[in-house]
Image (tube, rainbow, N blue to C red; front, top):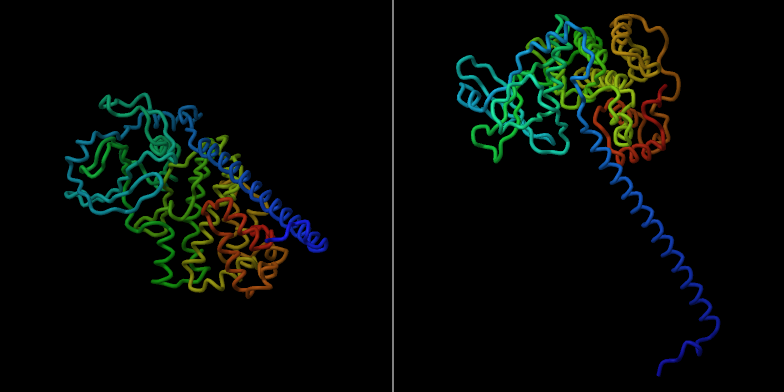
Length: 421
């Protein structure tokens, strides 16, 4: 027969009760922490969902106060809206797929007669897509065509009008056409398709890899050759910003290269928004490490893209990393002076011309600790920490809040952009 609890010696009972209380306290703390994490996750989820709804609020492009010449050009622009038959029965032939993303898929077509290649982007029904009303002047070919089309179509037409001057017309990728329907019977349901010219040299990101492999130029030689291309991109942003719009997605993949590799054009207008768009002040945008001033943010992303291009295309990336924070060169001073005092795209063009390759810097490089001295230096070599810091510094990818928290933890709370300023 087992002894009763009362028959157990008092000391043993006391120890057992203390152990039970400790276990209860530990469990309570663990449950409380789990509860807090679940609540935080729920709040983040709701906030994230609401922010994504805000993200796709359409911009009213018709409300833009365009200059008279641009407005006339825009109103007289022949909207390239094709019926499915006019595209499918033409001499365009499917070549191969180019990729797919959140918004849809992209394919390459070729004209059998002229040899011209075009890119056809098919839009899915993703919640990531912003939809705008069809312009009233469009002659709808059929009642089956929706009265809304992707934001990229409206934005593309507006930006063509804004950049319709001789100086910037060829600095954007033009819209060749739009149509609604099934393409070659491959899609399950009809959808909007956008047509743009094909750039065989690809994006600036691809160009950097090709230059590294084929030529291996020095940083200064690259800067001399490609700084005008970068300034051309700034000229486009200055024109867009002057009309109250931001591109919101400037990155190497959205800057395409012509046959003349020093001629770059801005593309992909699906994220174009008004300056006062509420998305620019949402938790989702800010925690993705974007600035609420979207004009400055466009320029910031363009500078990051150009610096990353020099780094990946040059013959010695380690030398780039050393000079980047040292600020002894014209290109590194251009970068750090902007971050110390952000200015408009137009003024950055002037700043760039005063910091041309070969010019003497007005002052020495950024004051402060180089990234090799952050606390992470205790665990990794200085060159590795510097490389990681510059990887993060020049990234134009929208980082999520979880990744941002990891980065902050890895660098012990240091803001990577301000490490050397």
